[in-house]
Amino acid sequence: MAPVLVMKDIVKEFGSFRANDGVNLEVETGEVHALLGENGAGKSTLMNILYGLYQATSGEIYFEGHPVEITSPKDAIDLGIGMVHQHFMLIPALTVAENIILGMPMPRGILDLKDACRKIKELSRQYGLDVDPEAPVWQLSVGQQQRVEIVKALYRGARLLILDEPTAVLTPQEVEDLFGVLQRLTEEGITVIFITHKLNEVMAICRRVTVLRAGKVIGTVATCDTDRNQLARMMVGREVFFQVDKQTCCPGKPVLEVKDLEALNNKGLKALKGINFCLCRGEILGIAGVDGNGQSELVEAITGLRRVTSGQVLLNGEDVTNFPPRRILERSVAHIPEDRNVRGLVGPMSIKENLILQEYYKAPFSRGWFLNRDVITKHAVKMVREFDIRTTSEELPVKNLSGGNQQKVVLAREVFRQPELLIAMHPTRGLDVGATEYVHKRLIAERDRGAAVLLVSTELDEILSLSDRIAVIYEGEIMGIVPGPQAKVEELGLMMAGSKRLKAS
Image 1: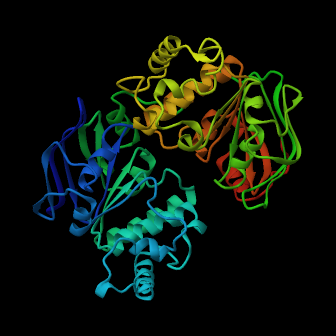
Image 2 (image 1 turned 90 degrees about the vertical axis):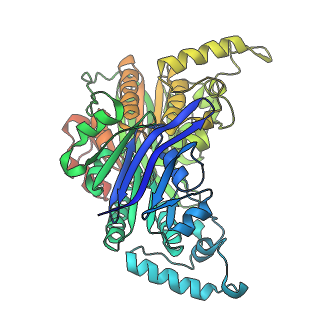
Image 3 (image 1 turned 180 degrees about the horizontal axis):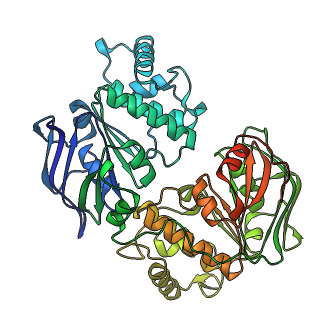
């Protein structure tokens, strides 16, 4: 079978940096083809070239057997190439139908929303996408918004669909639903390029996989002829250990005590319902659960970002309930937030500036009203080296880094302070296997140093690998707390679905 897409000797340079270095890619009709690699390997750059957001420095593209020149997304769409970006391109105030037809030429210059809604419903039924064309986008879950983006591409005639990190913000159930949709798409002859760094997903849904490392193709293999370990070696260039070695937990005195905690969500509804737990020095307490069951509100209540309506938060015995965030952080608390772009980093600011955001007003980073720039630069150089932040300069705006390296900046800033309490929420979300392994080792090192670590994650493998004790949250309640080494996936799964444990320990 002739390939639907051939990208030949693609080179993309940004100044002296070569993001794609002679990349060759062939994708066959009707397959899900994974583009796998570490953060910053050049996956998104390559697909942005295919979609016309970037122009290649050199190289050729053939689509459906013909040489093509793609200078804009309009060129790509006209050819039949669609792309769903990691951060969705939807306007929340508009309806699904309005978002889908936005920017499209109207026949005879007349806007016919009724006809658009009919076509959207037909596409939804055909591919099992379950999209309501009349719903406002702001009311939709993340998974539903992603389906809207897929329908938008199909509505515009996409025969090749690029999905950039499509599962990064989805719950496990939404991931399962997405895989069902992809199967339907390929059965109908649609070709999918699946950009990811999640090996389990590659093995589950993709027929072939092309691995990039440092801008170059390492190889293309069929998933039936490989395994996770080989793919990880191809990605990182070394053996990757999926299970973290750690010593037996020896907990010390309590650092964080949460007593009968209650708080409201952004809609004014009760999000936390009498939460109780204790976290001690030298242990990791994992909070497991499907996203959206109160995890965000819990962390915000502890860190002062959300008002507690009743109950207490105690730090080393001191009641800090409803303290302002800075007063809480100054009590030796570090916070790795769930969304590094919203609360973790200031994108236009440099790496070195982001590395001191928590301490900029203290010595040695400042002298009175003035910043000590020499000290700040030396500190940044040290952190970049110690935390393996891949960058050409500490002066670079942090928004220019890959997601994994942005996360390392947040981790470096928070761990540098040697906190007594480290709150890590989704610390490896969006990270490749190499960066994930690194973050896991740093969390274990903090625990072994004597810090109390509160780990919030929807990745059950991560919770099981790192946690000394596991608490499961469901609809704002703790269903039970179990010792990490004795935890059974089946029991955790039942609690995640709302079944209370008879005896919590």
